[in-house]
Amino acid sequence: MQKYILIYLLFLLVTSCEKDKFEGIELSTGNEIQVSSEQQTIRIALRSGSDWSFASPTSWCRASKISTPQGDTLVINTQVNTTTTERTGTVTISNSDQQKILTVTQKGEIYFELPVIFHVYSDGSANDAKVTAAYIQECMDYVNNFYRGNNGKSENLNLQFTLATTTPEGTPLVEPGINTVQSSSTSFNVDNYLRYNTYNGTQITWDPNKYINVIICSFTEENVTGIAMTPYTPQGKSLPGLRRNDTYYTSLPTNSVQAVMINKLFVDKAETGAYGPQPVWPTTLAHELGHYLGLFHVFSGGDNGQTTDYCEDTPDYDRPAYDTWLASVSRLTFAQAAQRQDRNGTTFTSYNIMDYYYGYRDRITPDQRTRIRHVLDYSPLIPGPKIAVENTSRAEIIIEEPLILK
Image (cartoon, rainbow, N blue to C red):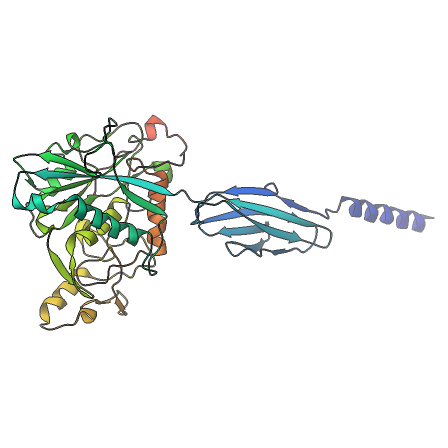
């Protein structure tokens, strides 16, 4: 009799365990996920009653599986959506008992139109006549073709620089994009102009939340073609290398000038290019706008003690060593002068817009694109809509010193 009682109790125990056994699939999220246009990694805790698998047929939305003694995780990696159109992908999760479909909806990327105003200091000199509306438009056309990747070699930033058509008060400009500043002083120390507002540049420039300000004047540093302030980022969405500031969404800087400066002395000058002489201004403007939107030089040993540009896909090289080598040789072809040697001793050709001197300067890399799009989405003092960042308490507000790059 005791034998039968024992068997019966074992039967009850087994059937009770079978009833408690989990057979489905549970996710730590719902079945629908909304993500921004940026590249993202989403980790979802997953519980399954049996071994499970997944399928993610969409190329921009790929899944992977991580299993640990603590449990399983479904990892979803989304690529950046460079279009303005929302898109949807699916991940199908299956085990022996159930199939679950997870829908991932990614927002389209914002198309930015960035109004640019050129503040042209004028004293009636010969160079004034060379700074024409037609030439400024030519420079803008070059910059837009470059930032759209129209050469087929560079990234498309999904933006357009436009010549401003009205003043901050709404008055139509006689010449789009041009604000002439009559002044007896038209040559400035550019570091003092931007970093310390020594020449009251904030009285000349317009609201940087609505315009990109480009100042055209002569530089006391005659060999410098251009210079720019780098952007700020909020503490909650900071970016390596850039200054953090949580106040400029609601106020404007008064002790520094958020702007780009181009040296008027080079308005009609050319430099050696891959295919012959090329005007200095268009490539200088493209380079300085790169700084203004968050890019650093692609070499070490430059200004501000820079040791990295925070982009893994731009090879780093020793700029002073390159300059020394360049000065030691008497005859070089352009292709030879465009060669660099990275920190690992590997020779490469300089194509990046954020390099100096001899180079093709016709490309922005994917990592550089990511930095610029981050600045466009989050940074104050940059025109265009912003993605909201969680409020920072007054005690945590950070204001860092301005940073300028040539």
